[in-house]
Length: 326
Image (tube, rainbow, N blue to C red; front, side, top):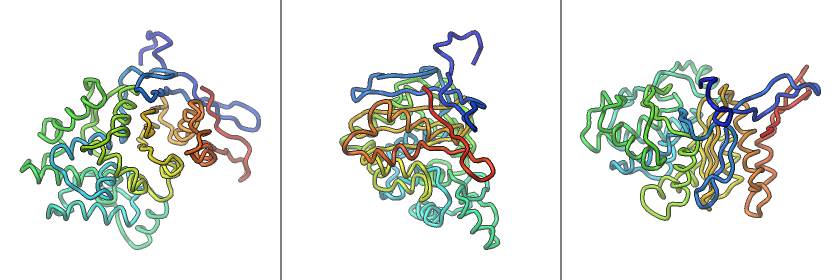
């Protein structure tokens, strides 16, 4: 952003890096919280200017696919929303998505990669495996995109192109749910179109999914609620948080983006300016605490707060931490 912008439209300090009692650095970012009625309850930083939400967009893209005819069982629909860890059950699910339309794995245009999960990656390497498109964390979304194209008779080879009928349909859904026009169409790490919106728009979209009583929106929300491990992985902080918030939906993205919506309509979205992934769960835990969510009876408050604990080591022992300060 330009330094000429007013201070109110700039990211602010949202976390301190504390080591041995010394503040050695800061994370800058922006956070917004919507109330149950959908209005902004509080915010810090730049929450109305466009950002690239990265994989936080996936549940909204999955909604667009369902609206375009994608019909998957809940566990596979959750995987269509995922930045999965590449654990065996994830890879099996991606192949099941493709098989539902009789499609070959070779049609995936995800870049060849190893699994995100450390253990899963080590298992692949030890077994003599190599990087593969199906192992890439976005392969569930791409498999679902291919099936959606097959259902509609759209070209399979060009499904990532921004002007492809699939992507045009997903953009329309995205703009409807965020309530904002797309300012920028970038290219995501997986090669698919990446649509911009503000943090307010992102929170608004997740709220729409979380409060839906029926229709495709409800199907997406229920899939995430029933299979949160499919949306991330069995050893991820996102799974811990959603387990601690019964009925909530959420999705993390690259560059330290994060969106969570509660079943009563409250929603939270955040992003750090430096994109550091380590601070993302720290900030979401603090956002929930600031709104009093961790103290509510239906919430496992201890688990929520635990997702926000990030200890810094020195010589193998704790000597500091990263602390939210917005």
